[in-house]
Amino acid sequence: MNSVLLHLLSYTGLVVALAAMARRVQVYLSTPLHLRWELYPVAHEGGKRAGYGGSYLEEVDWWTKPRHTNIFNEIKAMALEILFLRGVWEHNRSLWYRSFPFHFGLYLVLAWLALLVIGAFLQMFGFDPAGDGALATLLRVKTTFCGVFGFLLTMIGSAGLFFRRYLDEDLRNYSSSADFFNLALIFVTMLTAFCSYIFEDHGFFQARAYVHSLLTFDFAELGGVLFGVQVLLGAVLMAYIPLTHMAHFFTKYFFYHDIRWNDTPNVRGETYDQQISEVLGYKLNWNAPHIKAEGKKTWAQVATEETKDND
Image (cartoon, rainbow, N blue to C red; front, side, top):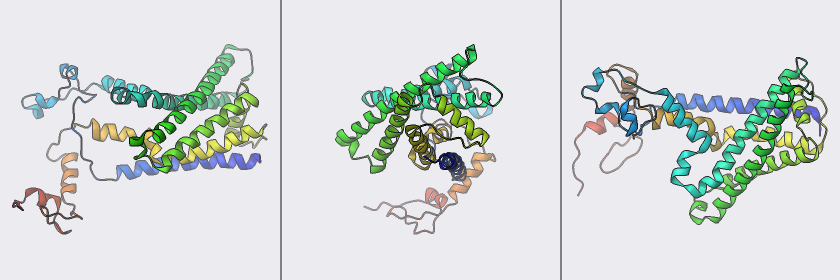
């Protein structure tokens, strides 16, 4: 495969991914205030109430007292959910056995990429990744472990999720063609990467050299066809994921902090009070017998006017 073309595709994939993620964040931050869940327990609740899922709202005259939050509890809850999918384990155990290897495999693949970047960066300053030193050996072992097990776990998980969606009639009704395509694309990409490791790049020296060439803008020739296909699919996948609903890998942060766990009190004159006032000023663009907005009434008018029974 043409080395220059693959390098350009890799750069393009990275730029598209970063631009897509930045755009999603910008769009989310510019949207109106979201309706909060206000369901307890909330992960960052501090004090004794955290033990039974209570809230600072239980306090008499709570608005006159300082709030006590626990960032450690929040980090712990996030880690359990991100790394081990605790919610899926608790509420859909059979799905967890397929979803966990898929997600954890992707985490290992990300760690593999990070280790390749670290090795390539050190190589720019004379470090020899094939050397006999302790650091070189440790880097090779960890890179191989994360890469091989990451590819295998992601393949197992993506295949499991694909067939679960296809064979489960209830789940199939909620699965689109894009869902099956996404899982198939990830499976094929990981299978290609694994085959490249087995037949062409045992030890990931070629992968590290390619990352080094990306960092130094040295469009070095690639060694094998499988590795070239791996790079091509990797660039496509990198650009594609942030453009789909799979972008939840980073948008979940906003869901948890702004919707699920947000229990910041609304105090008159402060930020939330201003945002709520803005939302209440929006006009309803839909109608119903008990609303009769007709595109003219605001949410504040609808919420405060008296209604008559329509029996």
